[in-house]
Image (cartoon, rainbow, N blue to C red; front, side):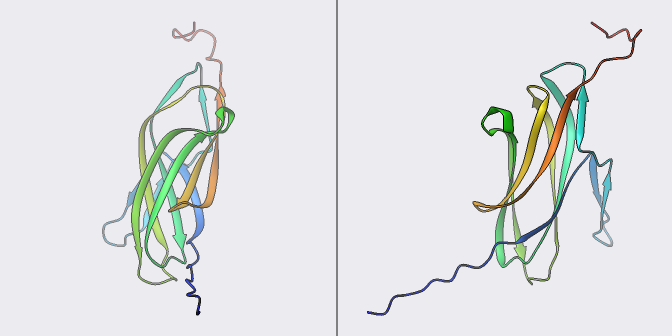
Length: 146
């Protein structure tokens, strides 16, 4: 009996993950401009709501259509998920670099500490980007001090 072999194609390669305020895509050149990149958030009290952020990802070496998933997890709470988003990307050539942007509004960070944006192709983990939330003190004399 001849055993049928199915060959699984490798997942895309994650080139970069950038957390920022905004990504602007030029309509003519299709080039992204990343505005206000950051890796930490400071808030005077928690839970803290971050009104808006964007996650910019670049992938290459994709084969055909790929579902790209992004999750924001709280590593201190057994990977409790705070956000999940997905987009389908078609790769016409393995040399193609795909620029993906996830606009995220109203994320509530329950406590100071470490969180991670995790990127998947389907269920295959591609990589992650850490974001740190810090509790900060407001300057003395700030009328919002408690």
